[in-house]
Length: 229
Image (cartoon, rainbow, N blue to C red; front, side, top):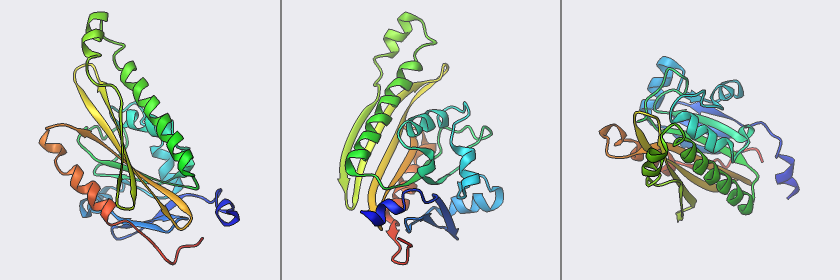
């Protein structure tokens, strides 16, 4: 326990080697899709590794979908615990597609009970976001729209991972959709690591590759035996 507690305040950041991301100080590694790396090498805007880069993506800055995702995650995890943020497009206000996949990686010393509490906080925020998105509509419209599902929570175990899913329906005035965050949590070198994948769900063909990219990252995950503990 002393070894684990001594590292609680260590800075969270990540290091990229080609398409491999290493989360510090845990030593956890995973691969991001080659298309993400190609975009990063031309734009530099879709992978965030250092604390100065991560600071720019803490909030959603009013951008549809990203603001809702950020609000849910920030209600549950201190952003200092975020060691990586990346996606199939960038995060800033010039990137407004609903069809992208984003992921945040959190490195903590959380117990299983603390992780449960964090997920409960995320679910409560998702519920509030759903309810708040109904506010601009007339009372009659709100009644009709409220029939759409609010926030739902599903938990499971997949291999080494505790997998949890929060889905919530959001209305943006001229359209609506379902947002989903998949949380994959595991242990690595005395740390708890949670990968939070953010994506819309539906039949739009632009969403088709997101599940594949998510599984690519999850299946490539490993713990470096050379990690500093």
